[in-house]
Image 1 (tube, rainbow, N blue to C red):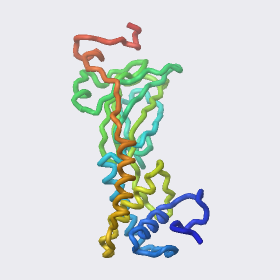
Image 2 (image 1 turned 120 degrees about the vertical axis):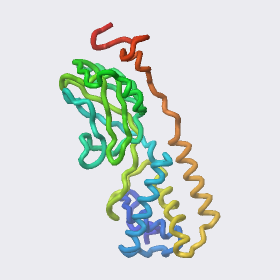
Image 3 (image 1 turned 45 degrees about the vertical axis):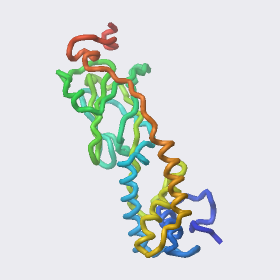
Image 4 (image 1 turned 90 degrees about the vertical axis):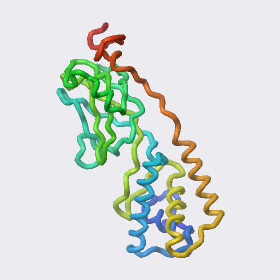
Length: 252
């Protein structure tokens, strides 16, 4: 007889329904071996997505790192990144941690900024060059973030690779497979259980509270690490006089 999960093997894909049913069992709303009806499971799904959104804002989930690589198009200065109709389809980055432009099999790191004032300080934002883009400004708008490049590539010979912190997307179906880093599944089960227990008049035990605290503490310690960035002032990019850095486009 399966204990907890409704599947019969430990390596079978885990779904949103599995997660929600386990949360209801932890909260002692249903018993072992019982299944939720679709109406109740869907209500749990809405609460689950609320928890994921809150965890993203609190950066419990948003610091899951991944890479995004895409080709740069001649004359195109900005790219939207996110789900659906974005120009670059991927989970919307909450933050860019590092990046480089590859051209002729040579990688050149880009300077990063999340401050619009840095991008506003560029005098000629449409400047095109047949070389490496050296500066990236990222605006983490919703539902799609926007990436701005300087200088704008004048050909199609470059690609950019970004290491980003991506948000965990909300689920749309009870049968969606849950693919998360270690411990996230367990944290969501207990977090959802703690949310629904009072609605059904069930006490939240000290043991459950301790388990949730331990899991959440492990996630926070593992995920919230300070990110080191390569950053130069606009003067070093040759925008406003003063000290200038090496210009790879003209080799000087």
